[in-house]
Length: 194
Image 1 (tube, rainbow, N blue to C red):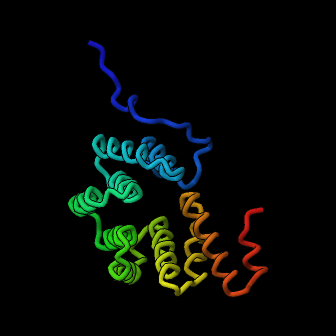
Image 2 (cartoon, rainbow, N blue to C red):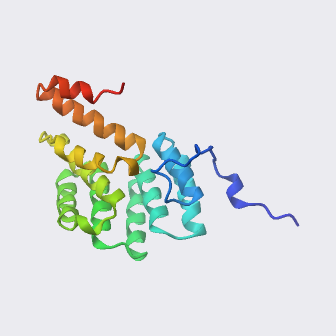
Image 3 (cartoon, rainbow, N blue to C red):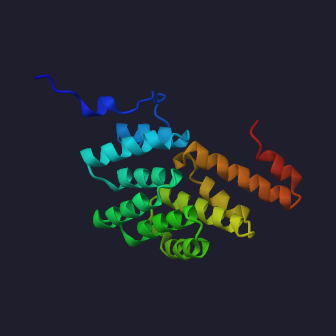
């Protein structure tokens, strides 16, 4: 009887070589998942992340599945993935950041703000990628609540090599919009891609 490779049924896309810095610390399946996620193909990203978690349980796989579930507005499955993260040993700071992301997606901004504040109190316990994402989330929350600050996006861009290109692009876009609103036209212009 011929054995089939269960991953051969999963969606695949070639990853550019050398591997971009924002993908380097992930397994091949999660590199694929993040690539799909960056390109708004969250169904494919979710399938790959769940397959990777089944193959080798990890917080990285759960986080990718969680992010994809939120993008697909599958909020109940995302809530279950949050519980799984806690069971797998997510520390409180990482978990607060994920909760903030969940509440941003479900538009419960006061709860999102609470968890962002919690994560900020101990941000030094986060790795650089998650610290960048924390600043990005804090900036988006401030922007949505009409309290825009370019500083937050500048802090996130300090680690831009770890952000997905879609996140990096959003940082530049929102920072440019804030500067435009402040009538800092030259600074806003510099945010535009050349």
